[in-house]
Length: 435
Figure (spheres, rainbow, N blue to C red):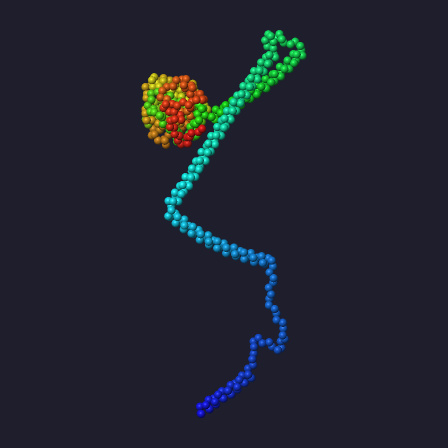
């Protein structure tokens, strides 16, 4: 009973103490606020916050441009990253292919190059065929023009003959014409008028004939310069004077001969002090047998330059010429023929001599003592064109040489030692066959 009473007393004291403390706190301290509105200040209008202005069209445009530029930069960056990744992967694949399939790639490249080469050769063959056809058409047209000019010349000559006969008859030449000559002045005036007309016609016809003749001569000279002689379809062109430019000949038989005849057509671009057309030589004697030109002169040597035949002032640069050299060991008879005419001859040239076997036969150059091409002498090299090179193991008679020197039919003849178009003649160092 004592304990509950004590507890009740304690609770009562606590309650009373709390009320007293609460009263003192309410009296001593008043409530104060930091943002309290005092009574002496009136209620005012609260200012509105700062309002933003409306954006103009230019502001919107600049904003759009900035956004577009940002998007573009982002897109470029993405594309750049993608390209770098693709290139890196492609490089890895190429490295793998090159390491694993190198032989296959090389073979594919070789096949491709071979196909391209075949196509190029095919195109070149087509172009050459077209060029040949055009040349044939041009040649046919030139021949037709020449034939027309010849027919026109014949017609003009016939008309001129008729006019001359008419003029002679009108002039009354001869006794019978003198007796029949009119004495009437009017008839004489009429005849005189007709005679003057005939004279004017004759003068005009003669002038036309001279023009036609000049054109015909010009055409013939042009044809002679452009076309090959002897009816030949091809020739050897030596475009430059060089130790490397020549043609090597392989005869059909041994050249250990005691007599021979060599004939050829040649057109020299320029002849110097010593220009070789045909040469046969050995290591011991590079000048065993030669036909050469010096300025306007032609020389034939057998067994060396101490045995020679020469003819002067018969060579013309830029024009075709037919050259033949004839030699026989018996009595040493040697002769030179140019354009079908014997221009020089001499006995005792290498009499009793026999050409040694195993030599080298060249066109446009002579053999060196070492036998190597690099030791050839460029100063004796031939420049120009050459065709119809033939050689026999005997002496040809004069009639056959004259026949071969004509501008038709020489290429139909073949020598039994060297035959043009039959024997092996290989050009070197820029020399080539032309049509």
